[in-house]
Image (cartoon, rainbow, N blue to C red; front, side, top):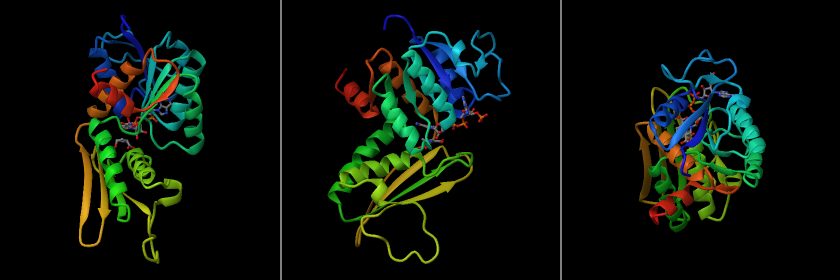
Length: 267
Ligand SMILES: NC(=O)C1=CN([C@@H]2O[C@H](COP(=O)(O)OP(=O)(O)OC[C@H]3O[C@@H](n4cnc5c(N)ncnc54)[C@H](OP(=O)(O)O)[C@@H]3O)[C@@H](O)[C@H]2O)C=CC1
Ligand SMILES: O=C(O)C1=N[C@H](C(=O)O)C[C@H](O)C1
């Protein structure tokens, strides 16, 4: 695209949204066209930065012509972003997690009508971790697998989208699914561990940005594969690269891995 990519941020007053707005305003490849918030956001109507003509709004109809939208909001916020993008043929990058099966099906369908890229984690490190875990889970097929994640105390969904992404990757490598193998809670007289189970454990507190460890537990040995995010701008930068890559593509459900593979190949 020879002109700047016109982009909207949904969830613009949130932790991720604020970072995205700040980074996009400084990025000459983009023109920040709209900053969408929750309907009752106190910032409503205020400029996104002193002197900016872009104001926080909940009105998608005022967003103007867009090339791409980036959503880091809530499941309800995503539903609104998706409706707008489908109606106007706008590409959509989805970072929001905690999505139910119905929304995942909606996104799958939307990926046939608009360019859509969803990832529960836009960091390069987690993309590599998922690849390593796929290999380890397949080779160490009979070892017990547990995924432990930790996040700040304000996170509202659990397990994290990343933990589920890692679990799905490992399950697929073992020829199963999380629907069959996932164990999300243990309490009381649980009985022994189910062979083949993929267990999840969740820590919440403080200002933890995001930590994920996959434990492959064998007899007499173990493998630990982990990732620790210390700055959430890594997610924002990854989502911005994805938005730039996605804008102008034909309709389809794209994976972050495909973008990374293309970049590695020099595309
Ligand atoms: N894929 C990735 O790499 C990453 C994903 N995430 C995910 O992104 C999402 C946002 O995270 P984070 O920024 O930390 O959360 P925040 O709660 O800080 O931000 C979410 C923002 O969305 C707003 N919002 C809620 N409903 C709507 C709506 N209907 N329309 C527009 N905006 C709305 C919220 O407003 P209000 O507070 O008023 O409800 C809030 O300002 C989470 O699901 C998180 O798990 C986070 C980091 C990385
Ligand atoms: O809510 C967060 O903060 C994060 N959410 C994502 C998730 O659910 O995996 C990604 C990252 O870990 C931060």
